[in-house]
Image (tube, rainbow, N blue to C red; front, top):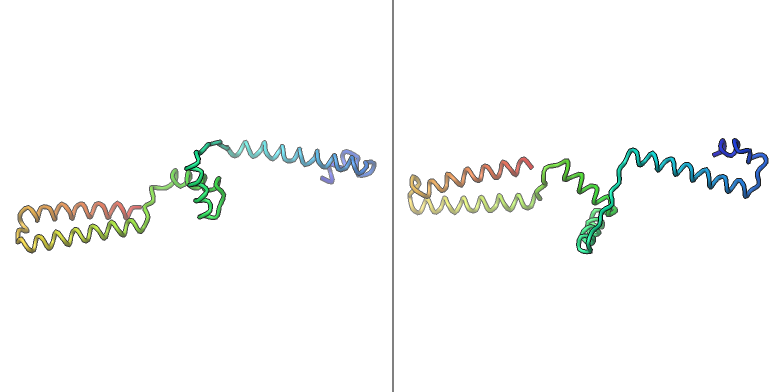
Length: 140
C-alpha cells in the first residue's frame, strides 16, 4: 500500500481525506483482483433446500461443529471419493443376527439328525451367504 500511495504522490502532497479515499480504492482493487483469481481457481454453486432439509443440515453442522456449507462440501466429497460407509454398530448387529441364525440352524440340525438332508443344504447355503455378507462388510 505504501508503494501505491507513493506512486499517487499522496504521501508527500495528499490530504488526510485523499489518503483515506486512496486507501479505500487500493483495498477495493486488491479485493477485486483476489476475487477474480479465486473464481478462476474455484467454482461455486448455488443450491436451495426446503425447511426439512435445512434443519437436517443445520443439525449436522451443530454436531460436527462446522458451517452448513462445510457440511455440504464434506458430504458431497465423501460420496464422490469413498465407497458407501456402513456404521460399525450396524455391522455388529448384522454379524450378531447371522451368528444367532447359524446357531439356530445347527441346533435344529442336531435335533433332527438330518445333516445330509434339507437342513444340511440350508446350512450350507447359509454359510455361503454369511461368508459373502461378511466379506462385503469387511471391504467397507
